[in-house]
Image (tube, rainbow, N blue to C red; front, side, top):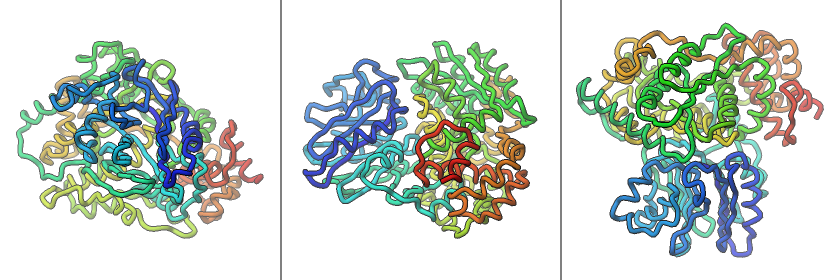
Length: 591
């Protein structure tokens, strides 16, 4: 796992190596274990390494005998099986790296190479014979990749901040995307909040020759099929098989592995399997909010970890953490994301990274097995009614000049093409989440919070075998009455009844509204004077929000506060500061 960057010049005279060195320097946190930059004529490739598999010979770029090169931000979980296949067994492997396996697969499959890879990846392969560079991203979008096409050529990197550091362009902020971001809480599709910077879509492969994009191909996130008939018992048996097998390959590592344990169904399922099948000492991490009345699952998580024989770490998150760490978080999130869960995830990652390089997490379980409340509503109502409830319109009315609606922006993801006409309403809603919220919101949070601290996050539910099985389950095995994830809960009830999967969960809420309300008198004037707020929003409407930041206004206040801090770095181009929220806001006002 790592960070990658590259530059394919349009002309021989263009200097590429200094550009890539600047980009690689900007993403140092993604790879604390090593860095390398190699030039090949008009192409320079760079890599920052977080060593997890093949600690001694796995440095990148990795080369084939005919000179093809690969750099990848990746974990290829089926690399063992691929190396055993007859068509790849004779390849002269030089390392034990999972990423080297990409080279023989590419040699045989060409532009379709990504379809054979089981894992999370953003990968680049350059073939000097054809002068073609291919960039590919896993079908769930677990690993990010951004790019720019300029007059000098094509540049790409794992993070936007690397492209901003490249010196290739000085992209301005796209006002329309600002409002999409505030409306949806993230941007989506190819467009980012910066003019000229695009993201590679989940499942997309891009072909570049002579510094120009020449072709695009896409793989669907989920199978375009209606549910397959099955029985409860048969489905439980299949679930047990695919879940255990997925966790087994996700545990392939030359370093210890931990688990983010919330006490919810998804992470408890992972713990249940790990307790039985994982032979190493396991450390679990749970976050809570001891200073507030907000409920969490700390007590249950601690009990389950003890039952599983794991070493358990409870991480408290306080108001002081909020005010101190939010500027750092906003600065790191170059591709902005308004999700309060980034706050505790950031602290969890920081603490876990002291002793570990890899943690498992339960992201994807809700999307694959239908755990969200809106899925239950979709099962009972017309699809359009459920769709109307997806988008939260709590911030857009404050905008001076609202941009396009989120539904218009969502067309960029092609979510509707992911489902065949025979698919159910529930499947269509799941498919939309898998190409919309999952890669741009949930996985963006996990990647950035963890990689900021040199920590790799693995998500066993977002495995091709698990996802294909879960998506094609009949609706009645996903939802029954008020219970979503019915099959998954039934499996957990049998394997770890102490997790109480069918009990009413208290949920996980980060108390940002309460923290902001406690400081509202200090924040109100500062927020209305922020340059970013005055440029994009109505200051008087913002003043009213911060005067009484509770309920709906509380989330508006959180969103606006995050945006103001983000704008300090990316709108005002201010240098990094170690101050807290109030220090940054005051500095922005001073100009």
